[in-house]
Length: 264
Image (tube, rainbow, N blue to C red; front, side):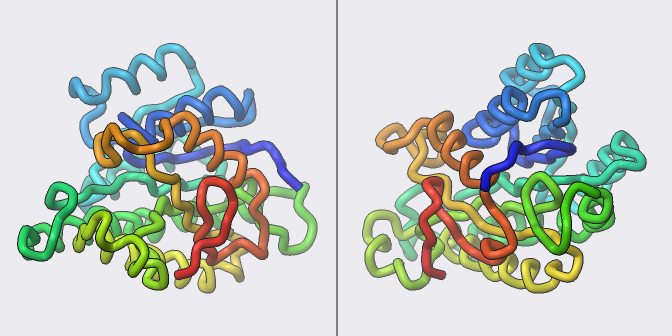
């Protein structure tokens, strides 16, 4: 059964593309019960103008937070900021959306260097790992506070981590997708994010914290390109519909924006 998303929600990479669309639609659908912490590397820079405008349009609903997920000090500072604002409350939903692709598509083996691999892993895997680790007390608090939930039912309105992954992270599906875009650093880092998702799901079952990965589809963003089949708005609408229906049985799974299971 679907239930409305609510409570404190943190979104990384929120200044453009899928992240910005997530903040916009969450702001429209969570009502008075929701508050969104929209994180990006440079909240005062030109690249965050749309996010600042959105925050102004939704006074008291969106808090813009400086966060560079490739920088441990920035992560620590952002967690302190969010913790201070939330106070006695908990964090109900963390959406790890921030990601990079190095080098440019199609990123064949011949074009990839060590720095491309390391930068992709630092942002796409280590960043979410550290953010989850530091936010765990707030996620636990949210899981414990929801007195409306009986038993061990998990949900994204109680306490959850959603990692934005991709179809091309699937090892089983690689033969079908590889020659469309080789993307060595991006593929391998997202496959590692999938393993992080599985590990966290197993670890956090005892806390009743749901952990899942979601493929947003091929989306028209700076990374997806103009030929992509989905707008950020349509992708996010589908993903949010899926998130409202997730429960215990979905923890540790990789799903697409329409709710289909993707093999690891």
